[in-house]
Image: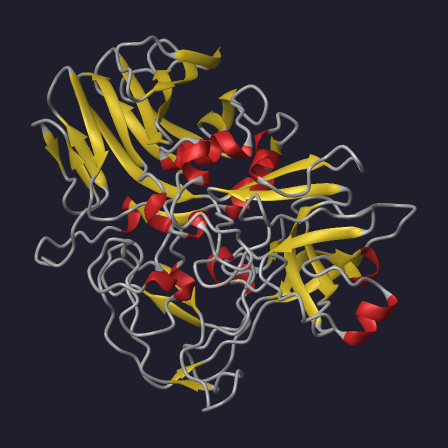
Length: 505
């Protein structure tokens, strides 16, 4: 699945208290069939913004999928590039598939803590398996261009959709003020601080930061806020923590000085931006979470137009793909894919994500081999839980449109072996092979999960016999625009939803 970037057959939902609109996959299938029925029954989902469960719905018309234009790759003009959304012939069924290209010819690929790591393969020199293979300094995390990254961000929370009615007692705000003086946080999306000195707006424990996708609510009892330690939860459906986060808010200062620190704590580190709105200066920085008295390591610093008391500024901070980004009023001010980057090998990243040394992971009781046995990285319980907050220094101020989004995480499946998810089971591509993954990572049958014996006989004999890869000869082209989105289904006639015409990045 590529949802929510691109939608197949789906049902569009809207929160009763929040007004938030999103899509979920089909619920109702005929017995023994993989094709959903036209009229969907018993649809009972949870609003991802308010967390409230919607009234069960019946007789919902199943919406058709997005229709896209595809630009063929011409060898003398342009070639497939990483992060392209690509249409290709599935090597296992020879049917048209659409996925995102993450691995290029001649590369080795590792998926660690949701991110994509690659390195160039040199025959006779580069290791192709074993725990030592992931310790080399030649591995690089692959970072996305800003335009692509923005399209791949998925909503976790947006205060613009928080219920305003205090009588909706079932609603529990995921944010809390750390000191007295806050108002508006429990309901609605307009928060005011009337105290003085330092304070924080903290993401509380009511909603874990995981790779849950609201589209995947296709069965009763699905809990968007489930955790791996929730009593009675099924391991095959446990979510993974996701620390690749984008934080944003609109802020208005009533005083002459205000400093804002959007902060993410993950992998044993604290990552933050320091934004002095009154002075117009900013930096992105990090330090060890266990050493709060140590000075910050500044990755990048810069300036912007100072914000006068009473004026608004939009502050947006990303911790994504081992890089820190800071935007003020939608303009990149400091950091980015190069200036804000910090580097780790796959082994270092796995150790940071779990809190265990590489040797401890190798000796873990269920370390496995990733192929015959799932292995340690398929167990979401071994990963550390991220947290986030906004710290403030100054007097009275107001914030609105507090938003948290997450990056797509290419995690290891807890249900079947995952190519690239273990140092004993990661692919080495030849000069004609590509690796494809779906944006709905937790529910996507893609290069990571195609079985060894599922290659179409003609493809195996005439084109490529390596499982999990897509040969250049099977690629059709790049999907670049949704020209006919799924029609609206809330009236007597199907109406094209022209508001969802869009470019594909």
